Length: 136
Image (cartoon, rainbow, N blue to C red; front, side, top):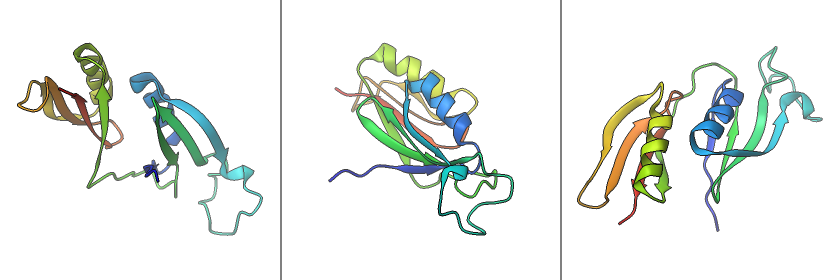
């Protein structure tokens, strides 16, 4: 069994997909807009959001992350969890951490810890928490 995160960007999903492509090399493998849903029900989406992302899937290395615009309210909230990026080396960790933190907030600068040669935590510009680590 696999557990895959599903992130709701509340109207900023396409922006998020482009950001993650640039920051961590994410590849969008599937994208469906609300206008493509043949079974749309009244009240299922806010007026004017027909071209927003109903469902998309992206690959980051061998991990799948599913995403959506959700209710398109404009205020995504990502509390209580973080995604972990396991970098292959310190140079990759430096690059990815800088990219993810751009426009966001660093909560623990990337550096040496007792459990890893490099580890740091940040929230990206959407508020998604990230932990970047180079394993021992």
